[in-house]
Image (tube, rainbow, N blue to C red; front, side, top):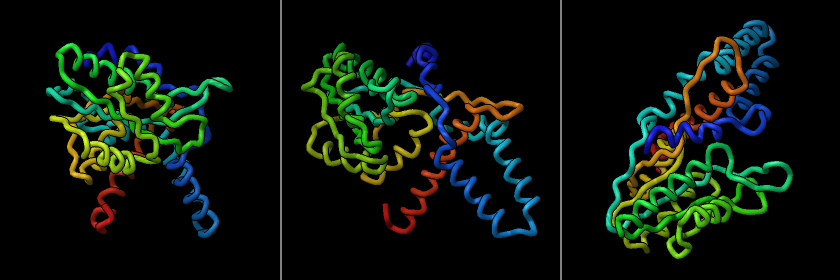
Length: 260
């Protein structure tokens, strides 16, 4: 996919508004707070360590952590199509723009655009493509990811007859499990998995658990940036990258215990 595709969609990297510290950083903050309460004799050391960690995650460490999370998927390549191709699109959440307009969250619109572009390549080559849009409603909004993204895919040129909506998944593992149930009844020669660079490694591991091995098609590459002083975007990037790194680690631990 040409580089200008990602440059054109760089606006999706920036959230509409800075939210409170997200799950990973919040959990880390709670750990330091617990240590601060329990280890009274070491409060100064804990305070200094916590301050240093959060300073670095919001500044210099943000770039290296993002690079680590998306290593191997930071250079997008167009997927190879076959006479029958299954295009799997993973939802990335929904959010409200203003008070009433529900839209794809963050960089998720780039997934829709890449899926539509890949589908049009299929049509141009007179090949058969089926788009599987996977994503439930973990945020309890008025519409699931699959339903919202699906309407945008149709508006982007995907035929409704070639679109399958999977709107029950609440996480990446369920994306893979529910998509597997769909694909086992679908005739296809190759499959393509569309998600972001940060999410791709964990997503492929989840699909591998069901013996599915789609081609990775990266819709958005996070720009690894660092700062000398903490920046709100640095904490957002570090949180997102650490979420994926810990998710990959959890996958291997659960697989070792036979849960995957």
